[in-house]
Image (cartoon, rainbow, N blue to C red):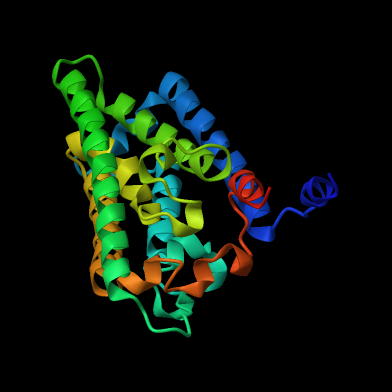
Length: 251
């Protein structure tokens, strides 16, 4: 009982507090975009063709926020990222003192990659369904954009509250998650069916982030496993983003 009481009194980490603030901000963004859809639909015109350069809209601000978020995932600045998102950087790699078991490392990477691409297949199926609904005129380009913004909110719900992908990935927490930096690519895939600078520019950036991440998995697999990168161990964690999982592990 005393151990449980101590866990209950553990302070919320700075990173987790920041992420809750970001989640609240994203919820505001979602409600704002829904309001724009119903009351100021002309602001959504920048989603078409090259209208991005022809008129101003609050969606320009959202575009800038998204681009900055993605650029931050390409720059090794630890203080702006949780470890789960920046573990592919050399700066966040703390090698074990013992000799690396490369056979075990290879098996781990193969296993997690198979799980990752199960997620990829499921997500691609979902996007194909959205594309079919769009081609059948049951969804519009504005609807697809709203879905992307909804995914933007769900991304942090997965981090802070509950993540359905853990059922497939079997990862301990976000810090060890194999697909942490797939977030923007997954968020923006509904925009695949919108032919505009707004959608294409976001998708290109998201694909660049995903490509860098996947290349690092292949080139530096030791950075992605807690048995070879001690920075990923529970004992080294300062982010404490997934406290509900951490507490179960320590109980």
